[in-house]
Amino acid sequence: MDRGSVLAVIPARYASSRFPGKPLVPLLGVPMVAHVVARVREAGVADEIIVATDDERIAAAARATGATVEMTGEATSGTDRVAQVARSRPAAVVLNVQGDEPALPPENLRIIAEFLLAQPEVPMATLALPGREGDLADPHVVKVVCDQAGRALYFSRAPIPYPRNPSPRATLRHVGLYGFQRQALLEFTAWQETELERTEGLEQLRALWHGMDIHVLAAAGESVAVDVPDDVRHAEAALRARGLGAL
Image 1: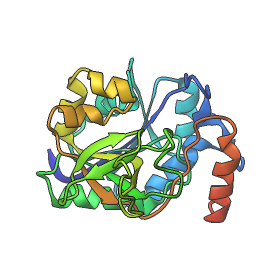
Image 2: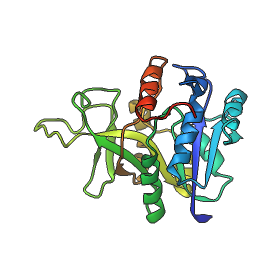
Image 3: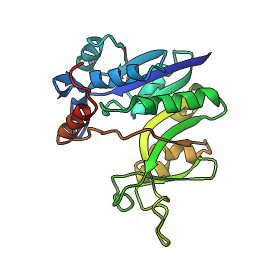
Image 4: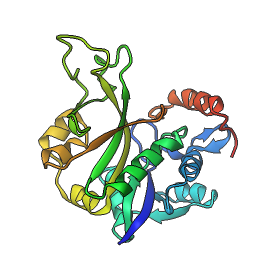
């Protein structure tokens, strides 16, 4: 294992149920996958950047950016696709970079990578931001509560903590970017899906179910996920706002 190296993997599949082919959707004239690759490069923390896909059309778009591509087999989730790549590489830290967040703040990647490199005993890390008005009751916003050391106690789509005595600082909304120590990633993806994660529809609950610590760090900024076609205009607006137009 290379104890100082970081592998960033961008899982990108074609067959999204809500938005088929979304890694190829043009944002300001550039395929979304190319924007994501650019954000990872801007972060400057990855020794290797891999686009992991099962579709040759996505692979061709990624290669056109100069990115390395690995064709993966069947995968039940993006994390499983990331693990397929990580098995054959010796990196110490593996970043699971969401392929549908073209305006991802590069600093978010730096925060996770630097934390995990400095603390190799920590198996897994993710990010959160302070909750906004309306987040607590919104099932589309994943909330997280942590202990005093910043380790996740639970993630939920339900209101947590329940606001019996409301505090504006009590609610944290999860930012879905993950980093793993390589061995922790391989252990995580070897476990079967749990009833708890299936009930909430939240993969990270598998780690908590098995007693794996997830450290929750303060994100540097917002990201915009493209889940459905109507999200494209929001993503383009975010790119323009950050001066991230044509590549």
